[in-house]
Image (tube, rainbow, N blue to C red; front, side, top):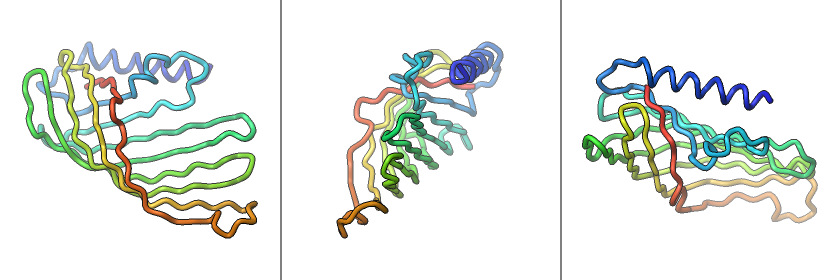
Length: 183
């Protein structure tokens, strides 16, 4: 019930910004993963994957993002990830915006039943495409190459290799669409 109330208030705020904002271009953008947006009012949603972008110049932005997944069932994984970064325009047209940039990230996941903890620290390097649906709404995607330093700590394991550190390189966010609200 609390998630529904907070989500409804956030949508009302975004709609108010849509209706009453008068800027020639918007300085603020709030984005949400489209798959999470479509099922926002479902009781099963534990992770909203939010992104905030602030324009420091018309073609440059600072970024903050979070992904928090909280599970209340025994044995489930609880995780969070926070990212901060910068992006700039490669090309901007009346309907499309192509941009690139990077995010630095830190995250943890904990398996509640075993207290196993995984920690990541790394960077996302991405190329983004944003389709403008009017002045205040957009759809975007940001395929990324991610380079992570990962570590695992398992206090209950007898295996000496269970506590490890390693480097991982991944392609992420392929095909992920975000719904953007500009205000």
